[in-house]
Image (cartoon, rainbow, N blue to C red; front, top):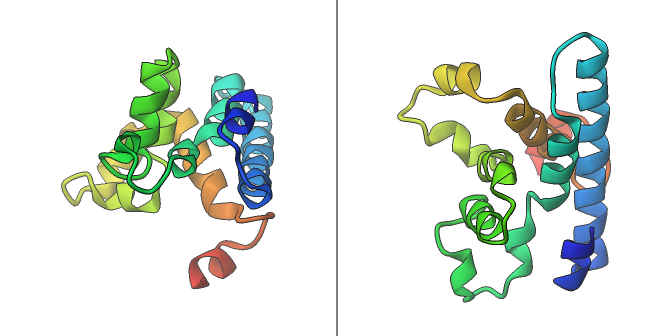
Length: 136
C-alpha cells in the first residue's frame, strides 16, 4: 500500500485496488481451505498493485508496452519480479493475446495469476456480478 500511496493514488483508484485485493484474498483463502497450494501473499499483493501503471502520467515512458505489461516491467525493475506474472496477465485483453488459444493459456496459467485476473473482473469500486461489470 505504501507504493500506491507514494505514487499519489486517487481515492477512486484506492477503492478499486482494495476491492480487488479483498476479492483476491477471499478467493485465495477459499482455495487454500480446499487443499490447493496457493501463494496467498502473492495473490493479495498482485491484486493491490495490478493497476500501478495507471498511476504514471499518460506520456510517461514507464507506460510503454501497454497496461499490465508496463506495470509488470516497473515492478520487476523495483525488485519485485515475482509480481510480474499476475500483474501482466490481469487485463481481459490478455485472454486474446495468446495466439488465439485461450483454453490452453488458462490451463497453463499459474493459479495466482488466474485469481488476480478474476478478482479484477469482479471488483470495480466494489464487488459486483460479472454481467454488470462487463455490461459497463
